[in-house]
Length: 358
Image (cartoon, rainbow, N blue to C red; front, side, top):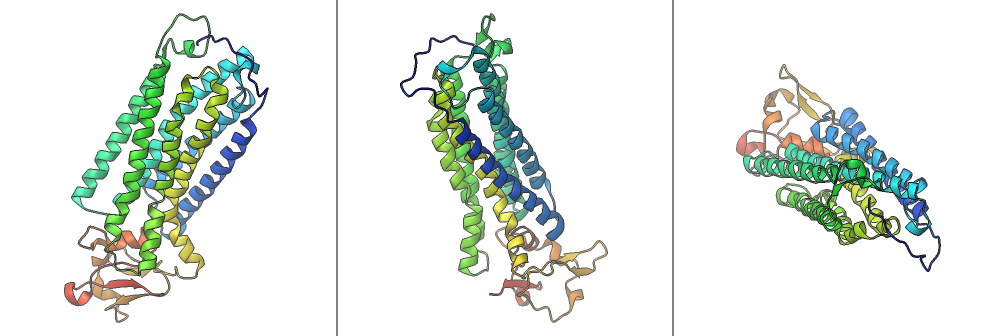
C-alpha cells in the first residue's frame, strides 16, 4: 500500500457515505423484489424454472454481498470521506474492502449477462443464435476470469495491497485503471448487444404493435444499464487518486445502479406473465405430458386458438416443438413472455395458431 501525504481539503470533513448507503440499499431492495417475483413466476405460474433463473439468483446473492461490502466501506473504511481525516487503519480497511468489492462487481455483472443470454436462448432456437450466445457467454467468462485474476494478483504478496511496510511487487495505478476501463467497455458492449438482440426476433411476431413495442421496451432496458456503465467507466480515474475514499464515491454511485438496474431490467421481461395474471388474463396454458395428453395450464385469458374446434386431441405432442421461421418457438414465447403461441395458421401447416386478443 502506497503512502501519501494528504493536504487538508478546503471543504472540510464532509461525508457522502450515507447517501451512498441510501442509494445502495434502495437499488438492492428493488433488485431483490424483482428477483423474488421472477422465481415465483417461474415456479408457480409458468413452472419452467431454468438455468437463466439460477444464474440470476447467484447474481442477486453476490449483489447482496457487494452491498454488505459497501456498507462496511462506509461505516469502518471511510468511503465518502476525505482520506485526510481517516486513520491509517481505516484506509487499510477501505483498500481491502474496495478490492473485494471490485471482484464482486465483475462476477455479478458476468452472472447477470449470462442469465440474459440463457433467457434469449430459451426463446430463440436457431443454430446461428445458439452459436452467437455461446460465444458471448464464453467471452464473458474468459474476460471476467482475466479481470479477477489481475485483481487477485494486484500485489505479491496480496496483503501488501492494503498494508504499509511490506516488501511487494504491485500493479501500477495506471494498470489498475486500464483493467477497470477494459471491464467497463466489455460490460457496456454486451449490455447493448443483449438489448438490441430481441428487436430482431420480435419484429416478425404476430401480435399487435403496442404489445410488440412493450416487449421490445422490456427486453431493451439494458440500454439503461449500458448508460450507467459508460458513466462509471468514465469515472475510473478515481482509482489512482490519492484521496480515493472521496473521489471514488461518484464511481460507486454509478456502479450500484449499473448492477442492480441490470438485475431489474433482466427480470422485467420474465415478469410479464405476472402482469397478465393480475389482469385476469393468465388462466391456462397448453403443455404436453409425457403420455401425450394435453392439459390446460396457463393460456392467457382472452387468447383464442385458431383451428381448435374444442378438440385438444387433434394436436397431440406437436405443440411442444413448433417454431416460427425465425426460430422463435411457440411454447417459448408463450411461457417466457406471457404470450400465446405464435405459430402459423393451421390451414397452411397443420398446427394451431394463437393470437392475443385485446
